[in-house]
Length: 259
Image 1 (cartoon, rainbow, N blue to C red):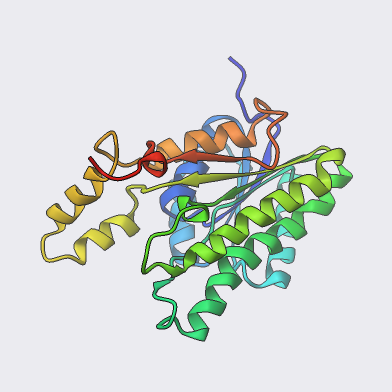
Image 2 (cartoon, helix red, strand yellow):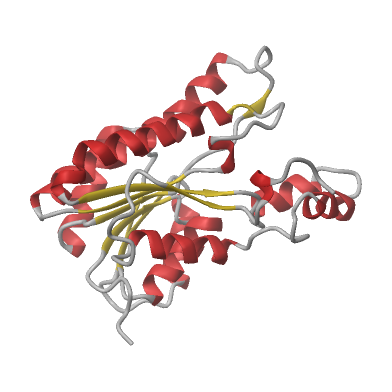
């Protein structure tokens, strides 16, 4: 059976852990070549060393996606190492949870610098090459925060709503030139961030159980389940999917209230 991502040269951000790492592993298993970016260089080095990848299939660079010049340089390096980049997965992001009147200006600015501008910096850096070589795909890892609101998580959902606007705008702008731009919206995912959240409660086991009980199926997603959806969306298996958002949350966002 042919590898689903053979010929894909993917620039993947936020790749050192969690969903990003799971996506990297899934893409490698399907024959892609990857250039991995993360702001945590030490963790990224360890991640790259742990990946089971053929020689020449994984490059990497430490970079803050909010710095456009750094990202432009990283894409140039990726192109030199792997060949023309024809797919981008904007996975890097950060949680900024507060209430509207308590959120600081610094939190507001950093939230948008990473969650929106960062995705644009990467898109802007790869798009010229994608257009020059006949097209490709961009996938933005959004969130159910992109269309629902959880109180006390301001201003994170504001930025995630904007990320869907970026997705649609780029998709329609370049659809006629062979570029697909879509978003993937996970709900709760069992990553280290989720574990750290539960561990912040007096009884982590109860906190975890409470989260699970919110969901129709009584559980949350694994990072590998989100990665499977990402592989599909970056592959050529959905050539007419554009400006779309695929929701992977176990049905939570369709539930009026917990049973």
